[in-house]
Amino acid sequence: MTRDRIHFLFLNLGHFLDHLFTLIFATVAALALSREWGLSYGELLAYATPGFFAFGLFSLPAGWLADKWSREGMIAVFFVGIGASSIATAFAQTPLQVGIGLFIVGVFAAIYHPVGLAIVTARWKNTGMRLAVNGVWGNLGVASAALITGYFIDHGGWRVAFVVPGILSIIIGILYAIHQWPEVSHRKAPAAVAAASGSAFTADARALLLRISAIVFLTTAICSVIFQSTTFALPKIFDERLQGLATGMAQWLSASGVPAAKGDVATVLGAFTFLVFAVASMAQLVVGHLLDKWGPRVVFLIVATIQIVFFSLMPGLHDGLALAVALGFMLGAFGQIPINDFMIGKMASGEARARVYGVRYVVSFTALAAALPLIGFVYENYGFDTLFKLMASAAAVIFVAVMCLPSRLPAPAVATA
Image 1: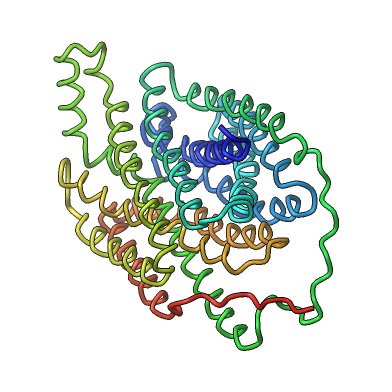
Image 2: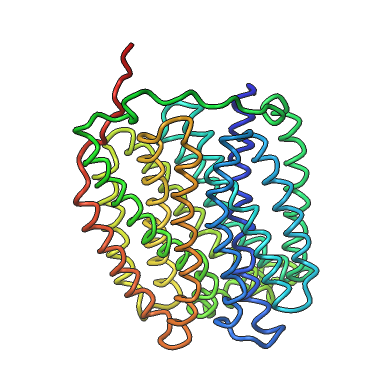
């Protein structure tokens, strides 16, 4: 395996762990703490909210530090920092202590997206497919959070779900720093002064660029609310909607000779969540290929339509039908992820790319954080059926906004001597 391939593998592992760490608590809250600590699901979500605000707010300084110091160095800090903070969270004895631990996890989690995606889009060709492959790894982290945490709840307790990935991340961080040491230890030279024109784009393209930027940030915010509402709430949705299917599956496994499977309902629910996330994450590979072939407008419209249809079908469904329709709307939720990153990667200048991604993820993860109180409020007062209707409406807003995109993105002007 070449050095470049190993580097890309490390970045993919980073994306996997980033999403795994941020969603461990989603399953812990749904399947363990709501029973162990006697708090409602909505009350527990309040303690996760500051961590997601940190996930967004610290993206911008992380991108700035990466551009000024070393992108590879910041990725090494990410691996070690998020692993150590996850381990610390496992020792929490109160909801407030969990909230503080999740906030620190969020601070380090904020590093990956502006820095890792800047490396991916700057270092390799076929940007759409590279982002898609990297995105699949992130989505598998989302999926594995439910599977791994559900397993540890049944075998060892929820604290182990924070400790084991934390140790793994620290080890990977040390290996990454060794492998990329020339870049990790390198202090970036000051960026060259921009050309006199003051812009990488022609004058005729600036108004179009402004319109595209507005659409990118609007759809980024709405897509983030949809993604958070589905990925964070899905373990709880399945806990309510798939109990019959999960209990039957656990009993069947027990009758088939699988040790202790009869009582492992949390494991089975985690496995269902993993299955949906893992299969839906493959949508990014299709989206990445189509982005390179067709561009973002057509692909975005298709993805938004998928979400509108399946969110509208979900209210009232249980067991097998609920599982099938959940897979449908998760295909849309995951498929949308690389589209805005693709547009930013094509339009942002190389030196400022991490900072632009930082702004994008400030918007994205602030919306993620705001989605948690939304989930808690809607669930406590109206139930998940209302949440599905809100998500269908949000996808419809995305569809209308994307209709305003041009068929082709504006290209930077070529510098002249």
